[in-house]
Length: 267
Image (cartoon, rainbow, N blue to C red):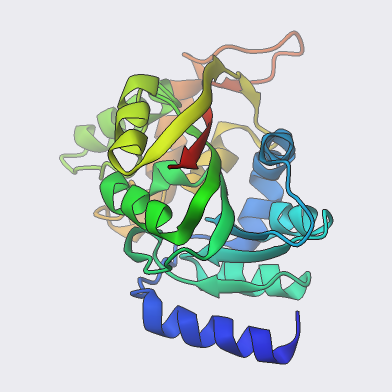
């Protein structure tokens, strides 16, 4: 993408997106503990079916690994993420990316498609997200996404809240895991007609175990907990969860992932 286009994108980003900095992501931890997120996300690109010369928004692009794969289809892709560290990582691999809050997007009729993998459940104001998605899509544009479904990481989430409460502290609710019915209703409210939707259980092997997962993903839930207590709590949560989760034939822990995948079209 040329410098003139890049300049337009950056100006648009500053003018159209209310900035909200997200600092809890650490690229190194993500690469070590959560690379499975983008690996599983490759299946979602098949649902997207990117076409040459389309303009696509990757909503919650993370470090840009999937964003880059989408560009290989000959389309233009803009990555949007709340974490400046992720935006910088995406740019380092050649992805056009900007920092912004998906709950305050102001794009209008710009994208042929919007793609989002494992990001929507971090956005706890889903009404604002869907409003922004609908506004950003061209008529007939498609929204293809995968997110956590009701019950996703339920045992892990319960263990976080119960363990923190034992210390007379309070964890923060930081995920939105809808049912298929709730998601369909929300999409249709903003003029996004569901073409297909599936929910499925996907017990997920964690490369560095529950502790590595918690070190990567639990910071938003522990935002009201003194930082010096985080490691102790993570150890306690790990011990509790390891007794409850299933294991594979090698005895490795499987996280209780339940996913919701859909394609919707702007009417």
